[in-house]
Length: 195
Image 1 (tube, rainbow, N blue to C red):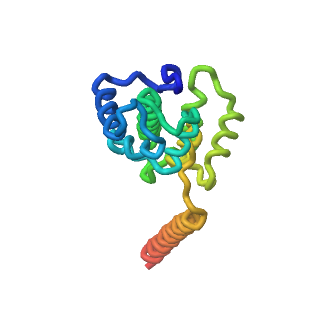
Image 2 (cartoon, rainbow, N blue to C red; image 1 turned 180 degrees about the horizontal axis):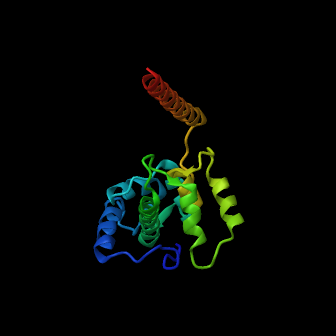
Image 3 (cartoon, one colour; image 1 turned 45 degrees about the vertical axis):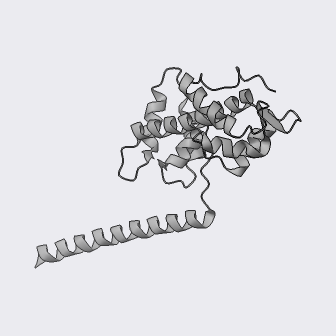
């Protein structure tokens, strides 16, 4: 079995360990101190997590020692990593909220550039421009939450291309309509002024 001390994201609280032990023991039917790989997802759900099949298979691949089972230390490792992922997502969201002040729920690229230029360690303006260009996939000059996650090193949130295209078209149509309305209002003002 694997050594978990160096791989866990943060120390678990005693009450967390106790809850995880209870969940683990529920699936240790032979009382051998191990559970089959096939029970990992169920044990994790009992412990309050809801991993996908793919996530569980990735975890098994990381801890598999060829026995087809995992012991409680392996289970603690998996749970610690899963809980750490949640903490990272919360960190991404909290950090994003600090900068996201516009009504669209995005960070204006120029605001992000300003902040990055004033950080200790000085990032070159060209590097910042390149970074923003890389993450601003739709080129709207705003950093969405999904783009921000990628910039911070997170996995991209997957948005199907057809949905992205629909959203972009809808936004463009709304902007055109707003522009037309402004032009109509200006014409009305001009007409009323002359009349």
